[in-house]
Image (cartoon, rainbow, N blue to C red):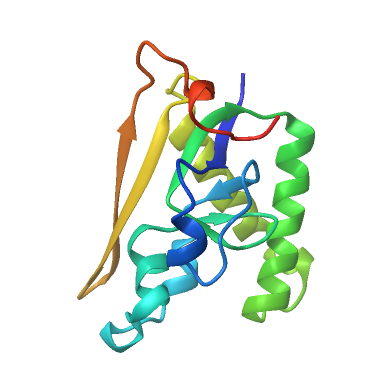
Length: 157
């Protein structure tokens, strides 16, 4: 079974701390590429929060504090890869979606790899810092306990 990260909200704080909050239930990746040319001067306000703790939703291209591992179909993976390649062309100046496809596929594969060893409903949090040699990412995993995640969070169907 292939798994991927899906946006969840435990409360409404994402709508207040991010410029654009990802929608509940959309698929997500780390999205650190968005910060590749950032400096300390860029780390202010809501942008700082997106950098420090935001997963990137693949429909709204908004940010989320939490994602949960969920099953995903090969068709959905293909759709996400195409959408991300288009986003690279639209937002980052890739010459075309076709030219961006290998990079988009790599980003999608990294998220699949990150999720593959976790049970569904495992929560994940990202923490980023700006280092001399680029961006450092740390991922924290919160495994589901006795109560299922569905008891307190909505993450789509």
